[in-house]
Each structure stands twice: as structure tokens, then as C-alpha cells.
Image (cartoon, rainbow, N blue to C red):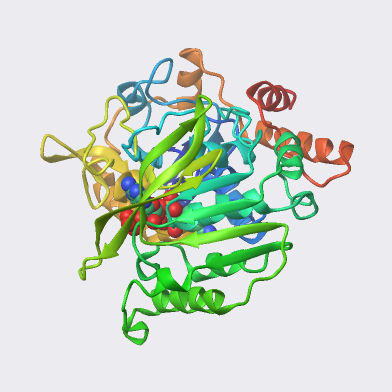
Length: 444
Ligand code: NAP
């Protein structure tokens, strides 16, 4: 028998647990999460109106309900007050860290810290009811917003900013976020890419969704598309489709709309401008293609007024105390998923998901990534199984003062969220704070 801890219950953690129990009938897996709720970014990152992607929770649930898998919520590994990595290693034959990329990249430009400038991940956490998210008054007095970056997260936050109450009400968005978005006076969102449409990171399916939002017009400047003299037919299919959609929008005549999304390209942010002690606009420098997929600045600038700036320039992994970390990539050094310490693979320690390969790819990318790690772990299993570990790690965790939220605790949270939804005349509505979540979990 091999006892494995998987740290993190997002897609990479769940796919790791799944591969482990599918590939070896002698493996028992505990999936630990610092939150009382499972599913990681599927619960706290996928936008509430993306119900189809959210429904993936159904298949992740099957993994966590497997007879040889246990969910242990509310267990923080590493950091202040957390279970030290070294202690965790003593409790299991092997540990797989699937902790994702918990923070955001920075722009490194003046004004980035002004009130009203937020990372997209802070905004996403708020509308996803993450218990650590603050209600930061994101939309107070906001008429115009700038979203910096043209990846799928930028598309998500842009779409959520213009969605109306009628579309959000059927989702599980927390009530406070729904009320705020419904009452917002926002009229315009500028989504800005520093390179051209052919280099944009969003996927075409997500891009197209912007074009069918009720009461919202998408505006693309044909002059900006023409800055890049690309041969569209020669582009890889994904980029070609993006450019075709954007060209279609650029050719459309203006239409009346309550809200506008302006998709801008070849503009890089150089400064966030202050107005009355908070952000009032973004200074952008016009760029031109350098012929190699990059851009160069032109020294010509444009100021876009904005009372809200969402910096959506990618996630970044954070170091976990006790584990090696490569600060240049924001990942844990590894060979085929085996953590590398001082240049050599460290038996019994593994990584999967974004902390292994960086914050790229869609949810499904985590499947092969997890499998590679699990194959490494199972190849090491004969040696690992000789390790001396406690009969039941949960008893040992309790002895350190931890009280993990069990699967039945999570099911109680689910029931409380259904009950809250019923009280509000909605379907399921997420609980948005620690007290409510832990109260519901402990009532099981
Ligand atoms: P991303 O795809 O890496 O996009 C980051 C964007 O930020 C790029 O446009 C990048 O431009 C820009 N950027 C980076 N540094 C910048 C700077 N200093 N100034 C201006 N722009 C800058 O990251 P993401 O949108 O956070 O997405 C992360 C991952 O999650 C992706 O794999 C994404 O597909 C996935 N995701 C998927 C979905 C979905 O499937 N529905 C939803 C959300 C997220 P350059 O290209 O020029 O660097």
C-alpha cells in the first residue's frame, strides 16, 4: 500500500489523484486543500457565466468520491501557521504539489499601485466568492475601464464587466457581486494588447462570446488591424480564426448599444495616471510590429480615461516554503514531475499543473501533465513504499491541531449554498466568506 498526499484540489490535483488510483490499485490518496471547498480554479477562476466549463466539477467530484481518495479541506501546507512541507513528507510515502500559480504578474510601470488599479485575479476572486477576496468597491463611480492584456482572463473580466443582471442571476455568483455589477454605471471597456491581433492569447470561442453580449457593441479599429501586414492565410488556424473574427467586427457599421467593448492593439501601457488620488486613466504608447512577432515603441502616446484598471497579464507561481523554486519561471524545478533539489531528483516529492509547467493551457492540459508526474511516482513506488509512515495520516494531522474539512463537510457547504439560493429566489448561490463556509462545513 502506498499513501500519497496531493496538495491542491484544482484540476491538476484531481487529475493526479485520478491517475494514481486508476494506474495502481494499491495507492491511497489524500487530496489536501487550504480552502474548505474543492476544485481550485474551476470553482474560483472559471467565470460564473461559463456554466459548461464549470460543469467539469462533476467529473472532478467523481475523483474525490473514489473509494481510495479522501478530500481534506482547510489544511494549509507551508507558510505561516501552515503544516510544514517537512512534516507532510513524514506522513505520506509521497507528496504531489499541485498548488497552481497563486499570484499575478506585475506591469512594473508608474501608478500600478493607485487605488482603482487591480489585478484581474483580484476581480475574478471577488465575483467567484473566494473567501480571501475583498469587496474592494471595484465599480464605484466607474464609467470607463481598461483591461490590460489580451488573454482568456482578460476576455473573462471584460465580459463579466458588461454582463447584465438578467444574465448573471441564474449563475452561482455571490449576491453582493451580482448587485454591484447590476447597478454599475460602466459604459465602456477598453481591452488592450501590446502586440497585434495575430499574437493575441485568447481563444476564438472566448473571443466570439464578446460579440453576442446583449446590449453591447464590440468596436475594432480597422486602422489598428492594418498596422500588421500579415498574410492571414499563412497563420496557424487558431490565430487565423481570431484575426478573421476581429476583421469581421472592424467592418461592421456602428450600432446603438448601452455598453461598448473596444478591442485595441499595438498599444503598451507606460503609466497609470492619477486623478483625485486614484486612477483616472492609462497612458499607452503606440507600438509597431518588429517583424519577429514582437513590437517596438514609437514614442507616440494616447491617454485613455478609466476609473478602473484591471491588469490581466498572466498568473505567477509563488514559492512554497521548504520546496525549491525557480524565480525566473515561477515554477518548481523538476524532471518529469520529480522535484529537483540541488540538481538531483528528490524521491517522494513531485509537482503537477501550473507550479510544474507555468500558467498556460486549458483545464484539459492538466491531464497529460498529471499523468507524466504519476508515471514518475509509480516508477519510484517500490522504494517509496519502504518509507515508515503512520497508519492514518489524518489522526497525525489532528494531533498537530488541524481539523480537516471532510467530504461530508463539503457536501454541507453545497447544501447551504443551495439553501441560500432558494432563500434569494435563485438557484445555487456561493457563500463568500470563511465564517459562513466553515460554519456550514462544521454543521455536517
Ligand atoms: P495569458 O494567456 O498568458 O495572457 C496574458 C496577456 O497579457 C497576453 O496578452 C500578454 O501579451 C499580456 N501581457 C503580459 N505582460 C504584459 C505587459 N507587461 N504589458 C502588457 N501586456 C502584457 O494569461 P491569462 O489570460 O491570465 O490566462 C492564463 C491561462 O489560463 C491561459 O492558458 C488561458 O488560456 C487560461 N484560461 C482559459 C480560459 C478558458 O478556456 N475559457 C479562461 C481563463 C484562463 P504578450 O502575448 O505580448 O506577452
